Length: 59
Image 1 (cartoon, rainbow, N blue to C red):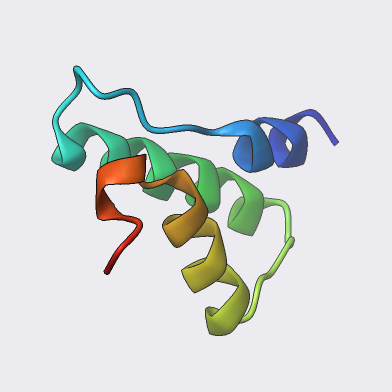
Image 2: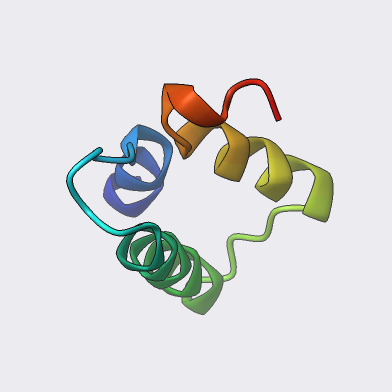
């Protein structure tokens, strides 16, 4: 439950590069996959869009 909570609460920090953020996202996803928690692709897409900072909201 701790890993899932951290995954959902993950947020982009404006001062960090997007590559760092995506790497952090992938690390959390890999940990959850390691304990057999699966997400469909649509839900993962929504998670990624939720984590992006406000400037990308128009895309």
